[in-house]
Image (cartoon, helix red, strand yellow):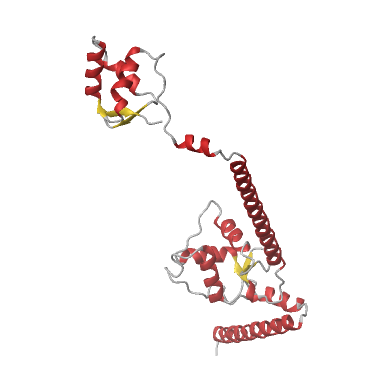
Length: 267
């Protein structure tokens, strides 16, 4: 066996030993978490094994061209990390996502991806500077930020609930005031009767002659076409009356228009 073959044999044996060590360290970490132990040595060893020198993922994980296509950054990163089985550098993660069809955009893709992932404290954790891993890889790491986020969420929900209650209370008070106002302003039977009777027509004594004629023509409460109104106005006035004058009168609030027909608005 020559030197190259011997080296390959030793490298293969070392890889198997490292894999066994990772598996053993994961088991120990889980036991420490169950017993409430700190587990600093296990965490330090996990970080050591995640380094580029000893990482089993360094250049060995194959990514298909469309493996992460259509996924969000978080979904793609989680899928890749689960495939690798340990934390990787942010550079490697950006490259892997791009190879899998989930290209990270922005002027600084590494920063964009890093910020996007570390905000999701439930699933991702940076075990050391420049690395991203899944939280389940480190069961001894406490999720303090998660509790803070939960507390903030509960506080926000409480504030929203209080605002809704105040709004509802204000609405009820307003309705109660309106009801009291209606009760206080209740009309006598005679005034109530007058309330529903039609209002008398407006006095036309001070109106211009043409306006008075238009009002008289439309006093029957029916719709009349403009041409008919203009003709009758000219007949009663005994002189030509410009159509624009009659139109300006019909535009007043006293009259109602539907298409090219007009009638006196009922008050």
